[in-house]
Length: 317
Image (cartoon, rainbow, N blue to C red; front, top):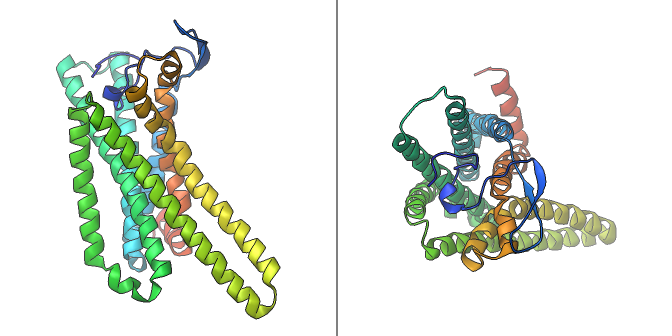
């Protein structure tokens, strides 16, 4: 992995593109058309990381403070916030080290910097894998709570939830170490891409099925109240909008990064793929944006959590 250079080293072992020099420019391609290249300043990376850091720390603090939130569902949300927190910490740490090195404030040997880069890569990769896993765990938890409501508390128990959480963290760490160690093997990239596709398919199937069941339930209530059309249409539109936002944010924030990995395998030398490779930093910034949006979708919509959050902000422990 490169030690120095203006191209970010975050998962740099998976990126082999030259650095961007302008915020937004058409970079000439040697064998093809011009490429639209977006450069993300270090200051923006740092700002996004700090915003995500504050948001997710508040989520973890609120869940830890309120005993009413000590349930499997909120533990999964808390672990998602911790995964996003690791994304933020890794980003802030790497950006700070890069700025200090470029300013000459931090003087160290290249081998030490490379080892630090490897540690940060493992940290960010494990946080990405765990974040995807906990997004899937939240979807499964909500699915069970709707379709097996009467058996939910016997199926999703705290001991089982803790075992699932521990398994996800262990698997994420092992996966990240193997991915960084064998980053130049095609099978590693294909496994990461396949994992993303599996999580996307799982979430889409579960949430679409949940929306269908909710609409069916709303129609049943509407028939009893003899107001079928207004209730059904309003509920269906609201549910579809929520589903679109949930899956849309997930795909838009994570999709470009895994598209990048796919193209490294499929067309590493193709000029068009080379244009996409040049925007690697943008794809990483989108993942950090996902760490900012996750609390808004999964945590802050809870009235109980918002109330606890106000107490946390007022320091009334």
